[in-house]
Image (tube, rainbow, N blue to C red):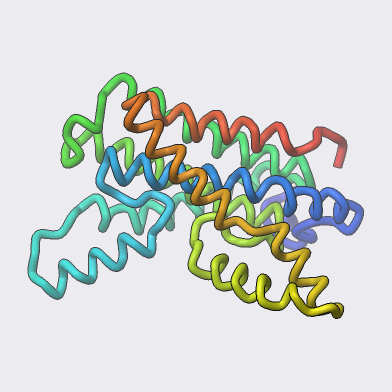
Length: 240
């Protein structure tokens, strides 16, 4: 099937709806923890948000107004993120898969990128100079990995909440917590929403990432790699 005809197929066939619900429930908390670990490790080691592009945009704007020297990593991270999303889209179209196979393929790309960050960091020690070239390379690979993560959820698990932007998720959690007290259909929906809360997994990932940096140094990147492996194993292998 050609790339053009692939764009006409459904994002997720109806027969995959049970798996879609399973992935929304089980996969997104693990990926949220991945985003938390990656963001903390990159911020502490490389002085850059790699899973939080919003933070980079805020800092860029602040530097532009204050006239301070811009952090080129934060500037470059934005177009790199955009290009990486485009590459993931292209890979998805080329492989022309649906359902679980589609998600597994994109998760494998995600895992490979995080593994590259780990191997590169062990070899080049980018945290020794957060403004040096090795740190730039490690940061951009990590940004690409997070772009892949966000894109794969949009492409393969439609309707899944974001795993990196916690402001909206926290708002939903508070509203669901308040609504859950109601003995009505709305309250039932709110209680179901609370079961899909991603704020705690993200924060747990942040804590684990900070501990990993303090104890493991460059090997801290092994934590998001292991979580990415767990995410891949959560997707059932079956014919789509």
